[in-house]
Image 1: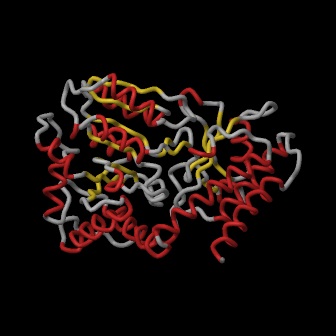
Image 2: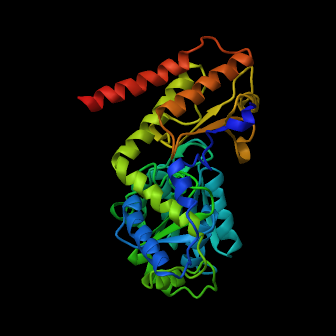
Length: 389
């Protein structure tokens, strides 16, 4: 049997789809305007509120996470509006590019890739641009493995302006607490193929009451991504356009799994997996891209070595049956990224880390076999003992 028959995905999306969700998605199709579909849509929207940390409705949207980013932008920003985008990686850049094409006046707050956006830095930018109408943030910057302090950043924005706080939670929602209402976030979005454990093709958008006032008065033309249409349809327990019914079945089962594990335990598991990954890489002498204080619980980025490149490591691991991701944009070819979100548990991660050690051995640069696995196990054991106490 070749490795192609059992490829193990450890990329930051799409993530592995558990058998329970695959089984749910294989159900016979139903009419998307049927009573059964209405019950499904109503149930999903209600249960997603807990994942987002909001009392506001959450809308399933047919499309990838980028569709949700565009929906957040096209509904809240008028042509000519001055907006601020924190660009600390490839997906902050994507938000800025979307807004640029919408004829917004975009102020880009450039943050070194691999570093978090500090509230003081954002405050200075807001003080320079008093007329900002919306600020666009990325919670987890997938391209760098940085978890930005969106709560502190949202508080900074509220202290200095009436700007909307709009957050890309594509690779954080379901893997890290977003606490949308508590943090004062006005619009938050996510995608299906990350911590929610689904295939690509479904997004979700949550909107605060404050943001609805802006959306309702926005004359910008939009159709497929018009959130006013989604709100009206959800009141009728349906969607404005044909939804991917099989993905809705899968999302309902994903929510079952999250609720059975307990959302707080899901977050703890992701934190543990991230720490296991970082300690393993450090034990192998591999330099992390990010500081521990801002490291994401869903994806870890690390640098290539002096005698091997990130792409060489990825190629060796792919030959051994484990797929990890490379760098994007200015980090292309310089880093590799390991996803540990969604349907990923400690044994899965240990298998991937063991494969990484084998790949390093094949590259002739492994100094001590087992050092990474040992470091990861120590994190796991210590965490289990802490919980048992």
